[in-house]
Image (tube, rainbow, N blue to C red):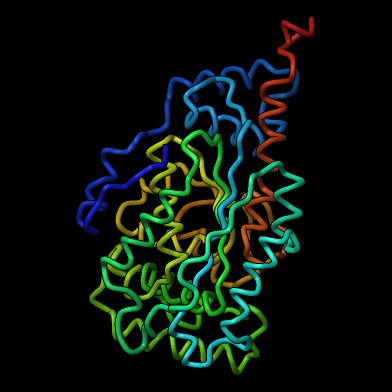
Amino acid sequence: MAISLNLDSFEQISALAAKLPKTDTVAADAARARQSQLTKPPGSLGRLEDLAIFMAGWQATERPKIETAQALVFAGNHGVCAQGVNPFPQEVTAQMVLNFQSGGAAINQLCAVSGAELSVIALDLERPTADFTQGAAMTEQECLGAMHRGAKVVDPNADVLVLGEMGIGNSTVAAALSHAAFKGQAIDWVGAGTGTSPEGMAHKAEVVAKGIKMHRDAQGLAQLAALGGREQAAICGAILAARMARIPVLLDGFICTAAAAPLFVSDPAFLDHCLIGHASREPGHQKLCYAMGKEPILFLDMALGEGSGAALALSILRGALACHNGMATFAEAGVSGS
């Protein structure tokens, strides 16, 4: 059965944070105790131990597992491309969606290796959002509609959810959402995206600054409607649906993390069940992760999007659980502990 948000306004979503499931501290403590008894020096598996405990808390079991991993890539087009912020035409978004569907993209290969079931959801590509330098990118109802679409494709039986995106111009959208959420200067959040020149990056910063000035009164989820795209809204909807079903989430890099920024600004607890798969090469991502207090799992100098870094991180997560569940304790192995 599909997960439905059943929410009709941003105010209802903002009030939802306190009612959502929380990590099971009893299960997390049991997993932590198991880690202390495994045949290794305490802490020697580093972040893998933390990841196993994180998964235990959200799956509410000492022995968390990944039998079903779902990967969702949302695609959208953006009116702000009218400002010349991207060297590629918006037709590329639909062309890449076809490439995903035929199995020819990096995310297809990485999902196959990491054992994730991939779905690609194109969101009205023939109808870009409005140009946020001229007005709001979406109305509240349009934004909520995209959030609902993102929520409905989440498999409630998944053990983990990998999220990614595709959309020409969405690095500009990500910079705007980050700037709106965490301030600073527009240039702090702008990167090369799909290969923009230094002059192009300066222009992107001007466009972002113009959008922020126009929508300076927007707060929280209103920032998502004012500046975001349908794929960003769908990502937020999927994050909320996963939380309702206690499904841990692996966010991809800069654009995917920035999509979640309006939720974080509304209440940081909205992202308690989310991990960041990798540190993007986009310069704004490090600042974004720091502002959210989240450390990426991988640092591979990637900046592709598509969910590629999150799919790679899924393999690390599987490794963490393999060690957690499969290693012998000192007592089981007949090894003297400390």
